[in-house]
Structures are given as C-alpha cells and as structure tokens.
Image 1: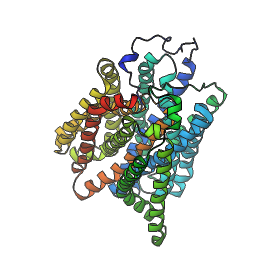
Image 2: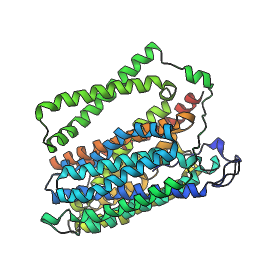
Image 3: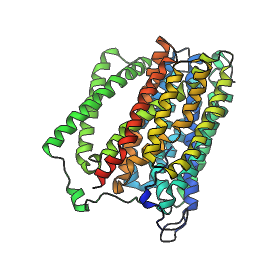
Image 4: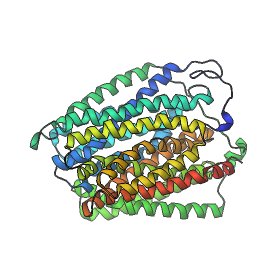
Length: 489
C-alpha cells in the first residue's frame, strides 16, 4: 500500500536505470518477486471486506460483532509490527519475507478445519494469523521497493507494484464473493470459504519455495539527518523529555484503551472466557503496553524525536481507520441506499467500482505527486474526502456516488503518509516502517465503532468517523514540510 514520495531535491540525480543500482547491479528479478507479495496481500485484504456481511447472515450476528473481522485483522498488525521490524533487522529482508509467507500459509490452510468447526472464533483466528503474516510482508516490502534501483526512480518502481496490489484488491471481493455468497444457506453457508483460502495457501506455499531459493539482497536507505553518527548514538532524552514521553504515552494508551477495551470485551465474550478474569487481563495488557512503549521510545530517541515521523504514525492510524470503515461497510451502505441491489451485486460493485476507482486513483495520483509537493496533494485529497463523506451522511443515490468517490481520493493517502513518515530515517527505516505499520490498528477501531453507530442509528451516521479522520489527515499534510525541515536540521 505504500508509494515512496520523491523529494524534489533528489530529482535528476544520477545512479542507474529503473532497476539498476549505482554500481550497475540489476535488481529486476528481485523487484518482480517482491511485487508478487503486493498482489497477495491486496487479494487477502479484498477478501476481508466481504466477510462482514457474510458473517452477519451465516452466523446471525449484528454489524458491531461483524466488525471483529477487521479487529482480528488489524490487531494482528498492531501486535506483530514491532516483531516484524526486529525480524527484518536481525535476519534481513529475506528472513522477514519467509516468516510472513509461512504465517499466511498457516492461516489460509486453517480455514479448512475452521469451516468444519463452524464457530466465529475459528474464522477470526485464521484471519488473525494471515494478518500477522501480512504485517511482516508490508513492514518489509514497502520500504524495500524504494531501494531496488536508482533513488530517483523509486516512485516509478513502487507505483508498478501498487498497480499489481490494486489488482489484488479488485479480484479479492469479486472472486471471494462468487464463492462466499454463492455457497448456500444454513449449515452450508460457510462452506464457500474453503476454496478461496485453499487457493491462497497453495499460492503462498509456491512463493515460499521460490523466495527460499532466490537471492534477496539486503539494501539500506540513506539518513538525511545532519546529525553525526556519534551524536545519534549518544542521543538520550533529558529528564523533561522523559516526563513528556511518559505523559504522551499515557494519553495514547488511554485513547487506545477507550477504543480497544470494548473490542476486547466482545472477543472475551465470544471466547466464553471467565468474566472475573476480564478486568485483570485488560489492565495487565494496558500496563505491559505502557512499559514496553516507554522503553522503546526512550531507547530509540533519535527516531522518535522526529516529529514528521511520530505524527506520521498518528496520521496513518487515522487514515487506516477511515479506509477500513468505508471498505468494511461498503456492502451495507449500498444495500441501505439502493434496496434493489442483491448482496452478490453489492460485493461485485465493491470490487468492480470501488477498487477500480481505488487503483485508478493510484495511477493518477502517481502522476500528480510527481508534479506537485506530495504533502499538499495529501492535504487536498483529504479535503475532498471531507466533503464526500459529509455527502455520504445524507444518504440516497448522491450519497452512494460520493461513497465510491472516496475510494478514488483515498488511494494515495496510505502510501503518501507512509513515505512522508519514513523520509530520511536511514538505519531507522526498518524500525520506523514497523511502527507505521503498527498504526494500522486504527482499522480495528473504526469498524466496530461504525457498526455500533449503524446498529443504533443508520449506516449513514457511521460516516462521521471517517469524516473526522480526514480532517486531521489534511492538517498533517499542511504542516509536514515545516516539521520535516526541523527534523533534518
């Protein structure tokens, strides 16, 4: 999902062709292999967005409960992102890719016994394991594409990969919907899940073998900070800064608790865990997260002092919340505002209209970003989506058109925010990438929250969530240049 954003000062620099490094090494084969990963996680993510409506019908759950499909997916991103970054730092890009593919294969093949079990928790477990694998791949493949050749061609390389990724997003709901919504009713309602996930498992197993025998060089990005290596290694937060870290993390953990605690409650009830153990487990996780976060930030202060990076994490959190909310309830929104449409037709519209617009937006956005400053493009696209989501809240055919319009203008946000956030991190790129991938947990929050608003009011009312997110994304785009200039000094 990531498009690196070229710095204007890098334009026109020499260093080789599209897939050649400055020393003449041709990395086309490596790039082609890595691009297959974009297709894979695009397809998997596209599949997820039709499962909300399917489980509502097959398991007789409400919209809020069906939002746990996204919670399982994005909580895995939250929990696995830092381990994925550490794996990449320890074993290189190839090691991280092999771990990610192994997890996806295990999760996909799990769907075969899960269909026999027929319980919601079994499907959520499979989605969680698959998402853990995708976390490894996204943490590694996204920044890796930016260094597979001359720096000035990074945007071109990643947009080729993103086109393939967009194809996966389109195929996911179309192919998956054909099996899932065409599998019958009652006891056989979940039978159609076996075939697409078996296909994913076989495809991933083949990729696993190919990557195991292929050469995947471990390349590195440049650090644009003017501080010397000695300064960076010795940089420690002062007493006042440690206090600031403690307070900031307390606020972040408090906000995460406010949103995630209800999700944990739903999962706890779903698993029939003892109610008396819920509060101790909940607060224990909160304390552990706080301590772990404090140690991580204080030990990597040179990374976290860069405000364009830290605010980039928060902005990505908000973007994924908005994107996931819209994608997850697209089928519900279509059915609410056009009663003549069937569930299968709505799933096809998600792929053939929504994700086609999403991919088209990436292609157009690549050209626009090459002509204008990317942070201004981000702010402009977010402003347009503020207007479109406001129209969505009005409902009707106009709201339906506006909802599909958001797909086009969301398309460049994730890659642009990601690239702006990791700009110039150098040796911190892998850890920084894992932190931004970790912020994908925003998707675990928006779906159940939007589902709750839909259950208590209407699907239209739920669109207030992405509207607020787009407002804050626009602000980040407007202030990014000022932040990055201070961080590079």
